[in-house]
Image (tube, rainbow, N blue to C red):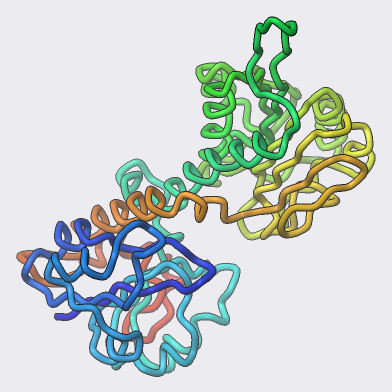
Length: 367
């Protein structure tokens, strides 16, 4: 069988497999191909791939020949038209939110493994690309904030006097939020964190952050670790607590999202207006509507407040983000390869969970 590693294009510097990862997965049992320039922004040249025995090809040539297509971003219809019936594709397709992407896979009797659909269970943690990318983006969010803030993060005692540390508020203590807390603390900031899930309080405090408590939040274990929508009374008290915390913060980093729904609006225009001039907001939920009422894609200023809207901050650390993504794939393929052959076991809940289209048949209703 032949596999292809895709070049994700100008807007996406990550690559799904580094040369060493491809060899670790497939060895010499498969014929490897990589699209020209795929790894350049992840610090891997075409010669690095060819030295590993992976043939460098054009996109069209690779898509026409591949049995297994490994990527990150969804393929276009023109790309899918080049694939032979029965070809298997890997990437992040978000099928629950973009069901229209599945039509061509069904019509052309293809197989689709969407990595964002891997079940969030203990056995699948090593394959969880969402957590891996959230780790990278949470780290980068703090660096973006530190670069934009016209102050130091740590307390400095200098001959010119003592400089107080920056105050950072992280809203949402999932994987990205926890990484943001840890990174801000390492840079010397005073960190507070808010989350509707009281169960994350211990994790926040273990990283040196102070947990902002709002009593009465409900949790749902079936939500896979995500926050769930709260009732009106809780939302009112939540807004009051966040407003007080935002007003005294130099940096606010928001990561709060609810699967399948618009991101909760947590920072109002009035809250932004109450912030100190020079303060920074990094909104990581902009792709699903944003946690701040004034967030736009990219970076802009409003009355001296810098607002950065970016849900793909992991792209700024393309090499390590690619390494993590590749390791997730490597662990997944342990379930897909047997005796050097591609033999997915659809009785395994992880394989079944991420296989969205099987031989052209939509599997979502069976998940």
